[in-house]
Length: 331
Image 1: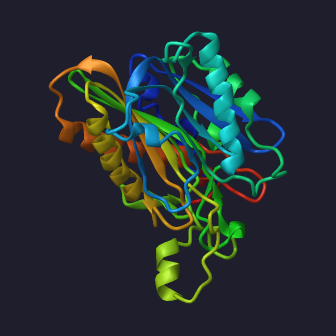
Image 2: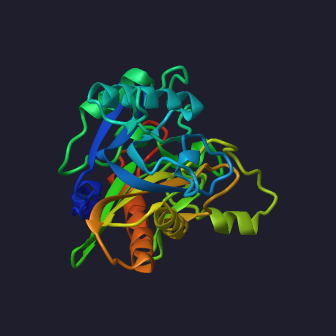
């Protein structure tokens, strides 16, 4: 029996609280997988930070502050491991049809960085997001409330896999926003971590590896400390992906720093984080014109919204066969 409070988790805002951003999901009904697109059609200054050792990415090199392109037009988060990068082609097609992109003189080229998580272990691994899926996510993109849980890039997301898939739990995608005066910072995170999910505010594990009988949370780090010879599972089969956005105005170097600081929020809410099994990647977008905002403050708020979004991804998830969600356990 689950905790009834998890059924009515209140909204804490969303990534679409930032003007100029629309979010769309595509969820594949044939198995748990999908993709999520963050559209910034007017262009957004972007940075990225990759901390996991098993990343799958597209066009992240463009976001290096020394490189030429200054703005992106979308970010794609997708399941399907490296195969899922094909979904970015659908986002490019959608934007090209709308004549959105970097002007080259002969064509407008949409700039669409992307990152993948590994969800091939759920159902038929031959089913993964493709170009059609990416295009469909764009068609579904909207402002307003963002659906959380088992949707989009979070459809096949699971957590707590270091002690084996048989003891893992379902997670998903979550979002959160914070406002300080005129300043807004928000995050959207698809949580597919090897480690456990911890609420930094209560220091309580909310989802992760379960005990052998499957009824309770095991506390992965305590198990590993007590049994250091235990075989760690899930090599290359994880990854948490996210997008942070703000209405504050920064250049690419500033947005890269914000992406770096946002990773602190991931490390607060996932334990262990940034492992050899994860490809943890966070993007940061600036769509606004709010000048003179403190880079340190925005980075600190970015870490906070990331950790909150990660917890929401676990609490909003619904269990599937073999992978109960937080609401299914008496915690």
